[in-house]
Image (cartoon, rainbow, N blue to C red):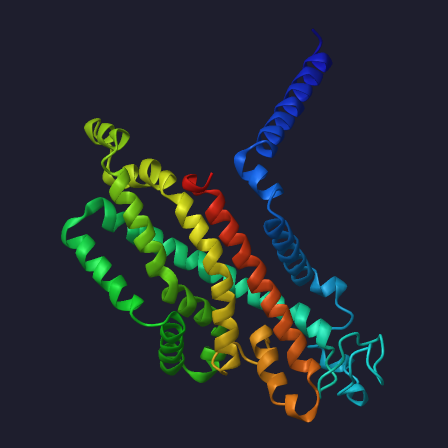
Length: 321
């Protein structure tokens, strides 16, 4: 067989293998549950549209609301296009500084999603490490770590995030605090939400550490960190990923709440929460579109993610199959 024929056979074999894996994924229980759940399908579409619109804001937004040179102050306080006096140049109207509300929502959603996803990844990482160590080692290590988690769980997560954010901003110089505010916000939200992941991982680890495969790994002399990472961790990730999906919407809501209270992101990096806070100052003057549309975008984003998390939790629950 020539080299060209061999390459063709290899390419055909790779394509067949890829199609086979895709077909098995399409026929899996999870895909079947997704296809037959209208709520999950609609939620996934809404979440995809929100993420794609936010990611593509520089290309699809009608204007750049943060480019001061492009703002026309004479166009301030314009109503949406479907109301009298509105124009399709600004489909959802403008605020008192002539910033296009639609463009501000698209750019603000980018920051909200970035903060929410990064905070959950941080909380997930801390929770997995703490849960694995507590569940596998047990004893006083388990007791100390879980009592710390219990103490933190007695306070609302938004209060913990508010406290941490305030402490860090007070400790840092003013110019430095403004420069790293987005990282402070991510850290505060992540620290506020790690105990839920830690307790979930710890409970699953307590079950897995008595399994035969873990005992066999101990017998052949594998180190404790290697057993936890390569053997126990892959078997406890399922519930944690479901919990991460459910907490993603809450993390986005935490960021919006902190920004609404004025302790989140600065006005130079406005998220949806900042837009709602700014618009709330003008709602009594009749400019309702400045706060209603960012609020609606936030509700749809958080609701779609939460509904997806609810579906994923039910789909991975063997008792409901």
